[in-house]
Structures are given as structure tokens and as C-alpha cells.
Length: 371
Ligand SMILES: C[S@@+](CC[C@H](N)C(=O)[O-])C[C@H]1O[C@@H](n2cnc3c(N)ncnc32)[C@H](O)[C@@H]1O
Image 1: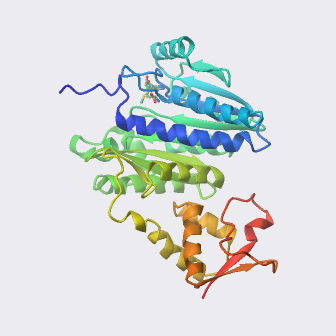
Image 2: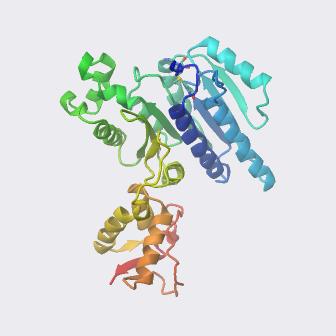
């Protein structure tokens, strides 16, 4: 059977990539649209492609438009106005941008909920101007999707600069498989840049793709600092090929929305997409075991308020509902006390493991003691 051209057809693993993008952006928009502060949301798809593939698969710009329309419809239903949304669709190829324009104007896509600006810049030209543009924004939020074919020209330092003003979030696709398996043909120049930035030694890089993925994650985290959240979503295209989406945000709420998206796609581990269809393993009932062990240690080792447990849970790549499930179980087995900080009576099954604004007293509503 002839192989389908990955550049002309949206294949399953690329569909998984844009699915994560679409599901995340819906959650992101729902939060930002209702934060009572943001007046303009700017979405930059820097390697946007032509929108519609030969097999009618929808690429990132169309996935973004669909997500915007869904959120707008939901807001209209609830009689809520949404902030202005501006999409910047950029691709170096003028031909692709022309195709995208005609796909969007000649088809049924609703473009009444956002403004669209088409650009044909080289990514490298755009990054610098984007950094200064973001720095000068007020009451605005930015989402940037970076989806190159390879990794040439992509640097951790660029992501850091795009994130510095704390107004943006970045989703970056990296062909991790091609990056770690370089040694057979020699190390390409662009990869040297990457390894150098992350202080990864060549001999360390080519052992195992999963280790390499984690190594890049900690490299990104170290490079951007602990005031930012970094995570990844793996996409296993076949038995031997794993790609990755890296996610960067300055806000724990954005991080929570990404965790929710990951757990929706991978209901067992919340880690990635698999070509086999993410079938449940024999152990799927035990998915929170790891968190249970960690949470026990964490609560034992100091005074832990509800806000601390919320953060701890997310940083360990689990959801608040997982922590609640564990606490409920401990409460049922009478091994935990939930103590009010103000002396109020706390009803059973109330743990307050959710997002409260930074500095809000609600983050310290209750604390936990293991018996
Ligand atoms: C992986 S494809 C993007 C796919 C698209 N995001 C989607 O979901 O369908 C990469 C795109 O980047 C464009 N491209 C390649 N080099 C570029 C550069 N230096 N700057 C901007 N775009 C570039 C290519 O024309 C191609 O359309």
C-alpha cells in the first residue's frame, strides 16, 4: 500500500496534535473570556499551514476557528459577551496562506467571532517583533502555537522571551524522535544548538526517547525558571516513533486546563496519545496510586492547606478530582482529619481542592492531618 504524504494528508498522529490544541484552547478561552479583565485575546499560529488537507483533515487554523466559535456560542447562550479575539495565521509559504484564505472565505467556517490577520513571515523574523509586541500589551492575553516540520531555528531562549511578560502561553511541537536518533547519521547543527542550551551530552541524548523527552522538559523548566509551568504531551505515532507537544504557561490555572485536556485524551495516565487508541490496561483502576503515595508523604511532612494540595496535585500531573477521590477514601477509612483554619464546622467530603486567586484566604480554608 502506498504511504500517504504526511504534508498533504492529516494523519492520525497529527490529528491527535490538533485535537490537544483544540480542546486546550476551548478551556483556555472559557477561562480568559470570563476573567473580567482581558479585553483582547491574540492567538498566533506561527506555522499554520493551509488549513484543510487533501483528505479533508482540518489543520490548526481551522481547529482554532472551530474552538473560538464553540466558546462564542456557549457565551451567547449564557448572554455573556466575549472579549475581542484576533487570530494571526502565519506561514512562510505564500501559496499555503493563499490556500488558507480561500478555504476560510469560500467555505462554511464562521469568522464572525474573531478578526483574522494573515502573515507570510519566516518564524525567525516574527519572534523578535512578537516579543516586543507582547511586552507592550495591556489587558490582553496571548496564545502562541509553534508547529514546525523540524526543530531548526527553534530555541528555548525564544520561548523564554515570548513568556517573560507573563501574558502568553506557548504550545510547541517537537519531533523528539528525530532529535534523539541522530547519532547514526551524525549530529545535525541545529541539534547541537538544542543540546547545548539544555546542557545535554550527546551520549546521554540517544539512549531512550522517553528519557530524552523528560530531559528536554527539565531543560525547558530550568531555562525558563520556576515561576513558569512546563509540561509535555507525548504522541506515539507507532511502536518506534514518539513526538511531543511542550506546553508553557505562567499561570497555574492554565496548567490545570492543560492537565484536564491531557486526562481527557489519555484517561488512564494523562500523559499522551497512542496510535493503538489508548486502550485501558489491566491496572486502570489504580491510576491514582502514585498520587496517593506522594500525597501521603506530602501531608505528613508539614502543615498542608487545601491550596497547597491543589498545587501539589497539579505539579505531580494529576487533577484536583484525583486528590479529592483519595481524600474521600482516607476520610471513609478514618485516617485523615480535615481541620478548619477558622474553627468552622467542615462537612464531610468538603476539601476545597480547587483554584482560588493568589493571596485569597480561601487557599487556607482547611488543612489536613493524617491520623
Ligand atoms: C507541520 S506544518 C504545520 C501544520 C499546521 N500547523 C497544521 O496543523 O496543519 C509546518 C508549516 O510551517 C511552514 N514553515 C516552514 N518553515 C517555516 C518558517 N521558517 N517560518 C514560518 N513557516 C514555516 C510550512 O510551510 C508548513 O506549512
